[in-house]
Image 1 (cartoon, rainbow, N blue to C red):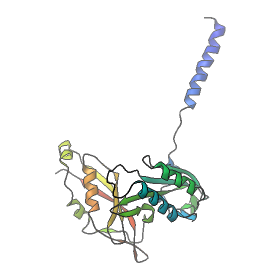
Image 2 (tube, rainbow, N blue to C red; image 1 turned 180 degrees about the horizontal axis):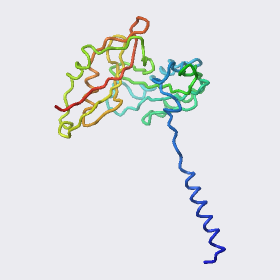
Image 3 (cartoon, rainbow, N blue to C red; image 1 turned 90 degrees about the vertical axis):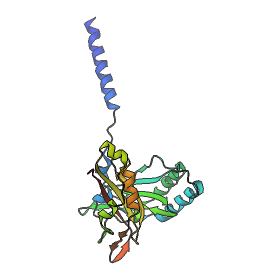
Length: 244
């Protein structure tokens, strides 16, 4: 091959290789950039906008499209996470992959005008997250943001963790597979100490997750308190599965 042709061909191969590398996108770790609420000293506070009005509108649409009497189990979720910068402006929004598109558009058009007091950590304004997760269960609306993350007196399980363990039947399939470990349940405790809702944070599978979730839902708590008054609080409950 002519040596004059070798150099141009070599350069083209290098350029094509570089071009292909540039197409690979590195996805940022948003939990490090925008801190979750449990890492903040003060969570973001909505200053301009009406979140209660938006939530009412969301549920109105949701119940119209998916009546509570519909028990098909195919209903969409209502999960949103707002990414708020140090000035209180919403930079980004994450939406649940199973959300309803009509409700998504309502949320997007509404939050454009919102402004927050930024989240604070160690005395400084920081980029932070503000989750908005809505549920409908047992004929009640569940708005996760209404439940405190930390309060002066946290909820306590009546009878202790042992009272939950007593309600659990170790799934036979997990026993046969020799599966052990801990399931972490996020429970939403209302002012009366009832579990308004609960969901799996981290599971081990083989039916253990569902067994732990059902047991927590049947559990009563001494309600959490803030300034001496019972309030709604979310707590993480670890449930251990150990083979004898």
